[in-house]
Length: 435
Image (cartoon, rainbow, N blue to C red; front, side, top):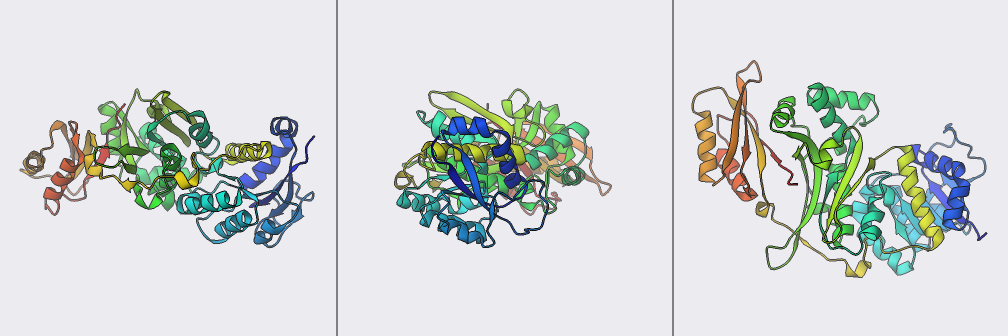
């Protein structure tokens, strides 16, 4: 048996302890597949005295997390601390600078600093791996980087946040409104006490930026991911979508717009209407799913648990097995110096259908005002439904579905209605996901 792969583990939360448990439970299987033992030699966490339910006595305790990168008995530094900057980023830079392989589940850090870390890893000739940073236990990073490597990826999209998916699918199932289901998600542990990153789409945007980089051989460009969360989705929208044959899901979509002289990258996270027959419509609860469309493979669906100790630990250990085998590979599918810098695409070029919900005063002429704005912006209306009063104050909901057309026309129509006293709230626009 070859010499063991020696691991320093920073972070002993649910995923860190899950890694320890997985390495112990599947030791013989992992050793056979890796061709050598995987051995944790040092650990670090904020609270040394806390009982984590695992035996930490076999490992050296390192009080200074950054010192892990300098240890001579460490081959791989595994970071499970979290945060886009701060100690996690300092550790990543120190580990790579010291010539250590680096494995992380930190999506925020990779979305913000992945390019610089990949450049540093290439300079030092060491692996940088982050399978667990996107969609937990689903092997979508490996699937795109390796399994679909022969394909030109045309579009990547999916449900990338389990908290939002739980809330939306439970709103669909129970008829409850957003606030009630957010509270339920927090009680079940699916949402944090401060759920902002989840419900505003930031978490999904981190993951989408990483997937787009891998799928399109692009430089990671989180700054140009447009994110809209689910806080404005009402139970009435869920009901109306259902009547039209759709469900509502928060979907991240990345695609190349090649209509101009140069290809441009569109990256968006938005609540969308998804046809009931679409694979994503059946994804409920805190589950993630990613669809990649290759020019030869066709549609590939990756689905599974997007978080949790077991699934995330599984992805982490899969990276460690790759390193033990000597399988490194470029972090973002092609050598870092070959990654392309795409300009952001103009969302107005998107061709598609939209669901638009207006909250308006219940008075004559409102529908005529809305339809006139649509006419003047050259938006063709497929269907229009007015619901009864939504509030005691006399507001009503008007929902419409547009025919396919350029998004810039919808934007123009809403600009024409901006400031209208007939509207009591900003309209909610949700794209209809094409098959």
